[in-house]
Image (cartoon, rainbow, N blue to C red; front, top):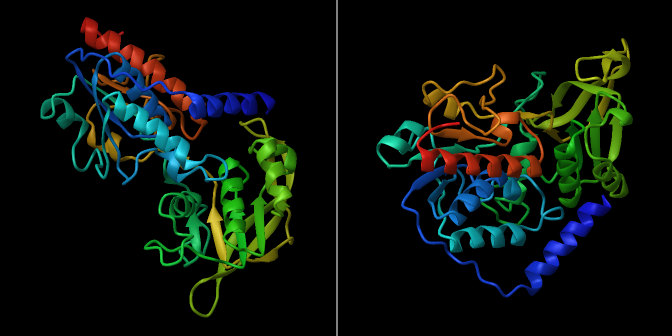
Length: 354
């Protein structure tokens, strides 16, 4: 925790006092594409641009930054920091094409065959939300955490008159116990909710969120309903979410994750008032890239399969970040981008994949 704060201080001080402008390197005559402008894609693009590559980043949304701008709240990562980093990349010559969905507007094959790119990096993240499959999940007022955070962070739905609205609920239930659940709960509190609940099926020791995030949530008045699991979301007379039925859980033997398996306690049903329910139980990679790229090997759960250098089963196609590992951390995604950039350079310069 202390190391992270020291690193942030050093970076903030440098940004506030540095007068050095980015120097665009001499072009090396080679052209590469990066799909996705999240932390992994931007890191890969930056490293390649510094080597002299002509880099184009394709972003599906209208603003570059990926999870840095749509998923992480302003109070944890000020968007001005992300904007500055993107401007630095653009000063290095990186071109960013927003509102471009690879797999729809262009396929991976077309990037090679029609656009002339020599290598492609796929850093599309894991933005496909998961749901529990319980009755009532289709009611108005039920969100995935991805949608809820995107509306707030990227679409500025908290502003009066915003084109993309958000529920300003009185009672909010966030299902899940990870960092994303904590972010969603704290955002809901800032929208004016009186009661915000974290509903998680295991105990506090098993919470996957960082201890610091849990502590901050408690300080802000988030109510933890641990060892509880939703079974149904109940509507009001207008078909909007109003309440959530839950059961209490006990912990049995450890499962494959090493955490104790939650077990339903029979006859323990109870109801939480919730006119907004946010599902924060995980995400998986969007299937669009794998479904439109012939010969791209993927795991059963959807992640792209790569070697230690980020190389996929397709020649010249590299991947990294959450698209490969599933939802993980920003720093791991950035590391994958750096590894792949170095491998892409070796591939293009030698003409041989490692």
